[in-house]
Length: 88
Image (cartoon, rainbow, N blue to C red; front, side):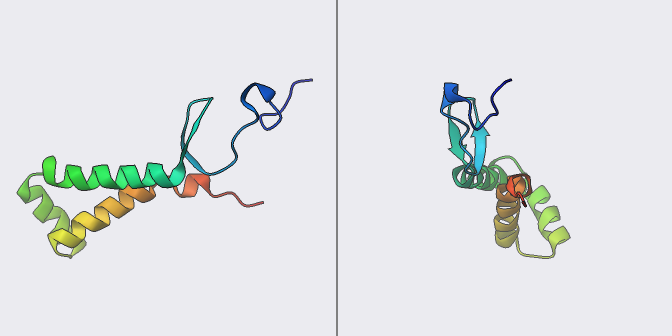
């Protein structure tokens, strides 16, 4: 009978802490992953979007562009939160 993932000695078991990325030997902390994604979204807001696109998004959210950039960055950062919440 095979071992479960937690008991698998090849990798000293599976790290059960919340993770953002996993490559079978290491985990990347969920917190750091979320911070990275939020920072990338903030950079892309200014680098990739045109001024008119930023204006449309801000108007659609009914908030100033500076706040829209922050909100979009926050929402991007939160993209994995539900996936890592376990009840039980």
